[in-house]
Image (cartoon, rainbow, N blue to C red; front, side, top):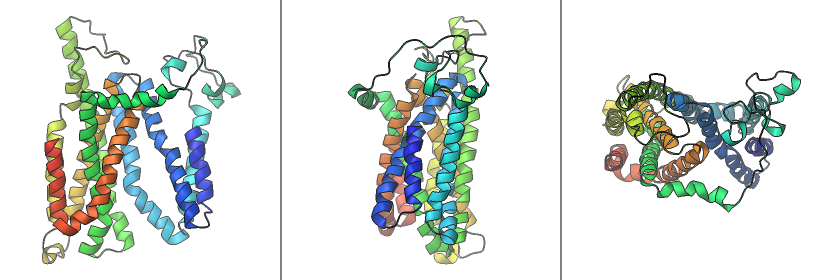
Length: 377
């Protein structure tokens, strides 16, 4: 709620920002308010889902989040073009206020140390507002234990310790490189398509739709695959260890002998191959002679490849995030925070260098360099 409060206050000021200085400062505060919600959302998912279903929940959560990244420029461009840029922040203010109201009314605390498995009776700020109006949960069977929340320096530094664990760091770096390439493709779309195909602002906005649809398609497909693979590995684990058929992998402590990497990454190899092929093909599709790109319907080629890039990259993100969450039981929010730190850091570097790379190497050259990084990882 505190994160949303910062975000909402920033949007109120931005809706009436009188000059660039105010706009710059409160855009920074807006980012501060929104950044933590990604980690909090993933933490909630880890609190409420068993390991066998976590892949589909994280994939869906990520699909909605990345879809908004892909189509946000479209909506923002329409609002700014017809109603002025202040209307963007007014829209975000209304949307975030409705979201916060829904959370306050319906969402209980899910942190296991406070709510347990959902049977501990919640009090104070941990209790959803709807229960104050007589709608009570039938699952409460325990009173909350006496405990005191403490925040110290260890609270802020402990997530950073994940970066010294080789398995987690390897996953974060690989996902970060793929995220950087996807960000480079997305951020360069406007300039490349406008120069190559002479599109107006409206058509450029529509050109982002294949990317947005691809984020949902890729996440949906990989969610099904991860759930299927997890069930197969769980069944094999039961058979190998003589466990009863009703045994399920614990959510909080995955057994050391369970092949969690195989359960999450079994299909990753062909997804990465398709990603590399799509990125390479996309670059060269924009590097053909102008006489070729001027042919009727040719624009469908790079747009189709953008769909594949978005689908495969987001499939990688979902697999990557789910595995990192599995490797950090009970620390879903911290794991997501570190994942975002690495992803956004590499993504920022990629976006910063994409224009100079295109100018020097051409669209085919910069995409080829990006795929070399993926193959190295």
